[in-house]
Image (cartoon, rainbow, N blue to C red; front, top):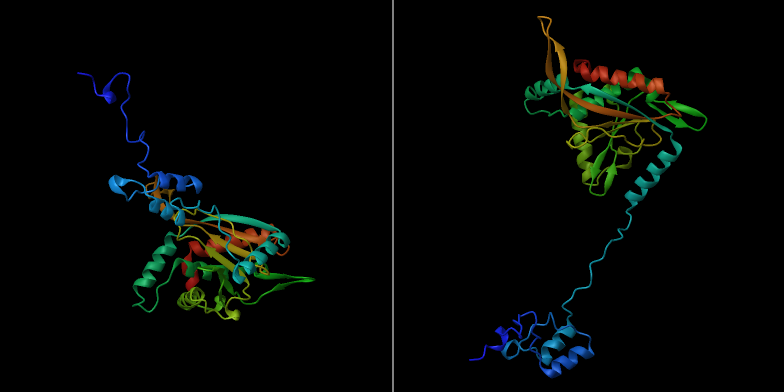
Length: 302
């Protein structure tokens, strides 16, 4: 007997892909007139046949979605406009120079742990609280850094008011811890927490974020950030950028005269200075004082 045609050598195995959809003639005509592809149209007629109604439905609600937009223009908030104009002005008008130093924070972390353990829940000091206090200590030793450029003069401040960069859903804001030089660590810690909460709740008063004599931007909570440089917050003359804590192997001399290795907790900080106000040697002196007090943190308790 003869082979069925689809299996004969002359014939071809017909796949589902080769078959033309089962379409009513009126539906085919309507689809052609409206330039509708029948590939995505689901037939509701007998045996899955595509009917005229199916094509009309496809015309009224196209199956193929329009391609997604490749971008979105986000309107500028007033806060974003302010940040943009101030930082652009800072980069254009303030000749920045940078001084970087690696500091051991092993003693500081132990002191922090001891103080927090004995606080009976009254306070919980962060590393940032110590850094803010150390900024004030260094700025009292090298007051030229705690200054501001004025046309015709340089204003040197007698108190150290530290602007603390806080990231909020609407952008970066720098609430101010006033009189840090006269505050203890517990007072600094409480004030930072209060201001950070107000900043995130968008409840800061203008006097709580306008002003300040020097700034800190701490990205230490992000383990990927070893170090970075920050843009000066005008009209201030300096900002300290703080990276994450890393364990570093350092050589030590043992009691028997041999050399060993110890793990040391270290952070890398970079200070940005306005060269109009601060000379290179002065910036380096400030970093040296900052390093000294961070590495001997008991001085911060005096």
